[in-house]
Length: 510
Image (cartoon, rainbow, N blue to C red; front, top):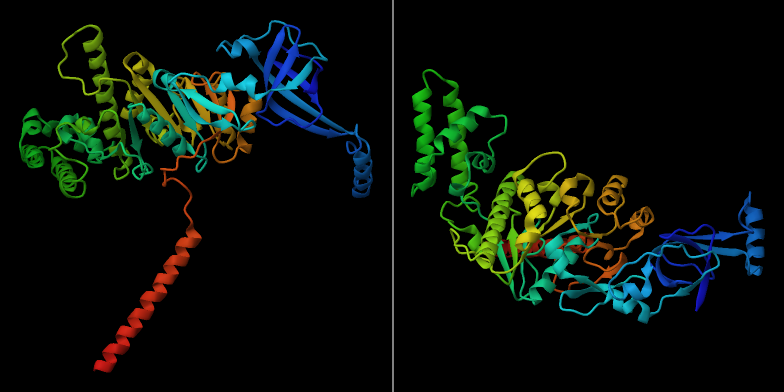
């Protein structure tokens, strides 16, 4: 069915169309050129009226409206359409752009289900369903899991637009294939996932396994407290690390340094005392986080499961240290596994993970920021660069793309972009994704909850999809404050009534 014609100036990658009806952004069309059928994606759409074009006042607008309704030729529907490639080649997984632009006057047709099914719903175990095309809901939208693990993925959106739902869906699909997923959960969004093979771990830090700088961070010694840092560095000896009573040994070593320097370096007395206070906090305030008895934190992660590493109870610095430790160990483990498998080389330890793993960093702007260097950022960067060789995929999730380290974002071979309003965020996305046009970036403000633009290697073509809702996920949604207040008021009333009855009963007894 003909729905329009190519008009104006055409390019090999873009055309302007005049259509018989308004075309929706994200709708696919067929451009019936002489070289063959070409698939196009509507990026921008306009509606104009001849009668209402130059009206100057309300009365004139009302009269022009009546004229426009009578005249069938009054409305004009214009669209900007991005050329994606020849249809038959795309159905075979090849994106070939025409060398000659479609000529003005070329017919534009509606894309049928038969045209789109092979492109967006390919066969193969590596292709998993993620939702449906937003403008063609009868068409299943699939993504390639192999590309997620080998080339990494970024999930970017403002709060409440469905990031954690997408993470849960991907994790569930990987787990259905007996894959291993590890999610660093900074806001305790995933522990309530009602999925059989889920392993929730409260992330712990073994202080014995850290260097002095990292230990200073988890003890929350300030960066500019140079004397405290020096005292801790001097006290954190191998003997202390191997001591059965770690904290006591560390405290005793600090005390020894204080006593040795109290005459010549009086400032050591105060600073050493502050370090001892921090050690006392570690034993009591942070005892559930800092555990010298946990010799192998990575050993708590289970292969073939969705592993939720709950770091919500850690401070930002502590979470950073914990994440950097886990990322380092996970990367080293996969390196050992590949060496043992391919080179038959003996490694220092037996690898814990015999197959590829997928690691997700929630609130990634906190741990891999643009403006500062963190330990977690260092190891996330190494995984982004080297992970594909060793079977460790990285997913970064953030509501502030402008605050993310651009070098790591540029390593994300695939992107899922949901509603984004801030222009700085949009600019960051545009610079990170070559396959997303300026017109599509401008549409990010109009997306609804659960809608996403998918670009990169995990899809055959850029697409706007509606993500399937994960029924097993109960956290992460907006809270119903009004209902909570009503329930609280009701219970307060019941409690007050019960209290009054008890008082009356006591008076009667007296």
